[in-house]
Every structure is written in C-alpha cells, then in structure tokens.
Amino acid sequence: LYRIGGTAVARDSSSRYPPKAQALPEVGGAYSPSIEAIAAQTPDLILVEALTQRQLVEAVGQAGAPVLAVRAASLDDVADGMELLGTVIGREEEAGQAAQEVRTRVDQAASTVGTEKSVLILIADADRNIYAAKPESYTGLVASLLDLKNTAEGLPDSGPFPGFTQYSAEQAVSANPDFVFTATRDFVRECQ
Figure 1: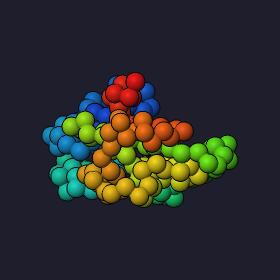
Figure 2 (figure 1 turned 180 degrees about the horizontal axis):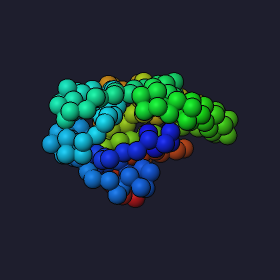
Figure 3 (figure 1 turned 90 degrees about the vertical axis):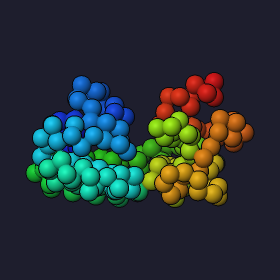
C-alpha cells in the first residue's frame, strides 16, 4: 500500500513499517482486531493477508468497507497482490513499477547469497510461542527465493498455520544456520 502511494488510516498493533505507520491509530492485533476500532476510522478499504487472516474477512467486513484479501505465499503472489491493490485504488502504474522492483530486488539478492548457505526463519505468536517457517510456508519462501537451505525442512507442522513448526532457542542453536531471520525481538534476546 505504501510503496504504491496509497494511504492508510489505521494499522494493527504489530505493523511497524514504514516508520510513519507507527503514528497511525491501532485497531488491535493482526489476529484479533477490534471491529469497532476499524469502523471508527471509516476506511474505504480493509486489507488482510489471505492465508493468515482469512478467518477475519467476514468479521472485519462488518466494519462497513470492502475487504481485499491479498495472498503472500510466493513472490508472484506478492507482486500480483500489489498490482491488484493498485487496480483497486487507482494506482496501476505505480503498482506495476513496484511489483517489477520487488522481483528485480529479489533476483539481485539471490545472485549475491551464493550456494551452500542455510537459514532459519522464526516467528512468534501472541502467546510468545516460537515457530520456524518451513519451506512450504509463505515465510519460508524467502529461503527458496534466495536459494538457501531451510533448516526447518522436513519437520512436522505444529503451528497455528500450515508450514510452521514449533521451535525452541536450543533447537536454533543446534541447527547452526548461516542466517537467522526473525519476526520478533524476544527470540533474539532468548538466544543471546
């Protein structure tokens, strides 16, 4: 939304990028938003992520605005979602440029990583449970795009969403990946 020149009127409590988003009113958590808080912002459109927030579509739709669910399970999904959003908000040209820029940046990054490197991608839920993203998850896509070996590959699903497995700090240390990507500051503190 920001990249293609759209304007947000609110955010969920975990959305912190770009920095100017932090000045927006919060409408609750990404998985437990307040319908009343959303409605109070009188949005023209409500954006949700199609995989992780699909259960919210009906509820947030009660806030009185159309809901657009964009999927982020692959690079193509992200680019297609940008282009769809651009069409919806009348910024097709900006969205097309942004989608191409994302593809180009990923290709450039992949060419600099090299082979034989491993990665561990970690996220935390609201209850501070830690999960590793497996290659088949939307987050695990990062490793695939960069040609990295995902250290969670082959582990059983045990998270709230398909493609994630519960993980501990001890497992992270013993996996000894070349790179660790996290979506939480708490896990980094636990590993230090």
